[in-house]
Image: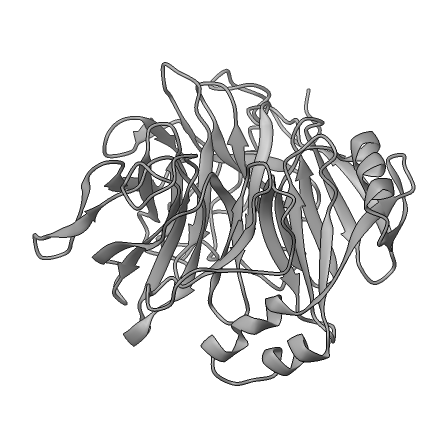
Amino acid sequence: PIPGCIGTDNSKTRWCILSSSSPPPPSGVSYEPGNFSRNRRSSDGKVKLSNGLSATVIAAKNQQVPLNGGGRSGDRFHIDPDGAAVVNGPNGGWYYVSNAEEPAVGSAWNNGGVGSIQFDSSGRVIGYKRVASGTRNNCGGGRTPWNSWVSCEEVDNGKIFQTDPRGSRDKRATAMGSMGWYESFAYDDKVYPPRFFVTRDAERGFLTRFTPNSQGLACYNKQNDYDRWCTLDHGTLDYLLISGGPSGTFTWTTNRGAAEQNARQYYWFNEGIDVANGRLYFTSKKLKRMVILNLRAKTYTYHSTVSGAFNHQPDQVSRLLKDDHNSVLYFCEDGGNDPGVHGRDKNGKYFTILFGQFPYGEETTGLAWSRDSKHMYVSFQNTGKIYDVTRDDGLPFSGQTLDIKYH
């Protein structure tokens, strides 16, 4: 038996069925995270959804993107969509900016780079175009405080580029590193000077911290978004050293060799990263582990990500309420034919929102939320599709739900 549950079912493994004596749900709320009893599926039938969700394919590789009003984009949607984020756009709209994890260099749909889908304030697709080309294996990345997109090359001697979701400015390499195999980017702007972090998906893949110097801070303190790009051009690098074991302390070092050895021993092959209220979260995918750093106290803890249906490698992570470490942390999943999107609440309990059903190996990537939190975007990389997931009750994903069905 699972503590706090009255039974299980066999739709996946070790599901929790909550007591029927729970308080009645609020009127009109229909979203039941983790409950798949109604057999809800995406518009193409490939993705199984929690009760109360709908999902529509809005973009597919090698296809012009359908636009609101009946037209199509001039550019074809890129191959192997990977890391992504939502950035504010004009008139209450937004951009969904997405990497192409492909080694071929060029500007065609099947080359590495970055693409950007534009939405109006109602969440309707009104444009798509390539915004960065001439790069390789653009894997993860992250949004900056000044609304650019940092795109990481996961390849030998790869770089970390800053790109413009609007497509008005050319990509630019940052000073955050050039060793390659970079994965995801996050920042802590609750301290001064701000800190910027990047993971590496490698056996000796240390966590890097970038601190702007005086020249970088002069850029950071400017008002115009484009004028702040140079923040990442000027600064210093150091690397994570943890003490070892399931919990302990950590320091930062400029000794890259020591950091490589430390990463190989304790937290190798890192992917997703998130920072909220002084805590940094990142995934060690080969160890199926999440590492949580308390950036203020300089302590850390390990947490296994293996839970019920979430049994493959953790990949990218995202948080809907960016500055609340008590909010749900969401995970993408790499491996198997049924990867999903999973949530972890503040008590460390896991649940599944959706999962794919494919005859081949897949991974979920590109998890992000719209400006109004009413649209969840996720891609299935090998299939090459972007899904727009919404709640049938019309509420934002940050709104009230029915009882969560935990693993």
